[in-house]
Length: 263
Image (cartoon, rainbow, N blue to C red):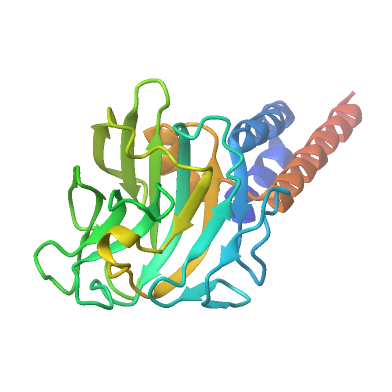
């Protein structure tokens, strides 16, 4: 979360101690709620480690740089041991950029997330449905998808959620809901506790894969609501959480001092 989001609070602290106290309390209360369901946080800033202490990602080639991971066709990332209590209930968020809307084989399909350990064609894809070089859609094959989502060489925030009780799957791009369906066949349930990112499956000869970059990956233990997805850019990592708590505590101490002076 950007610190600038809290700068107006300092003006409030100087004039309205009661409101400042309420705001500080709200910040302290909100941080645990924002972080409660976050299970895995991969910043990909020079490391494949989970900042929350879970299993690290494995790179299948590609280049890990200081600010992200760059991959060629089928040089994606694999997570073994997701940490999910229910392999059919989760939210996965990733910020991804595609170099082209076509796979290296010329296919209009590029697989983003594989759910069945590379044994099934089912999964989350970018699909260049009309051959438009300026836009494509996110689709869960073979169910469907809608709306232009990707522009080549530009990052997009992609989220997929699945509710383990209702079996409802929803995809989002840049915080907006794109497509939803009821997953009666469990196509979006992970097999063998393994997730593959940006890798195609054996069912299509590994031909539906593209090149690009990943900025980060986050995995949550529940199906986030549309409102929560819309506010995901404000979810801090572990270090930012501590910073927010420190800011809130400093605000609280400042309020106490102001109240003491006024007595």
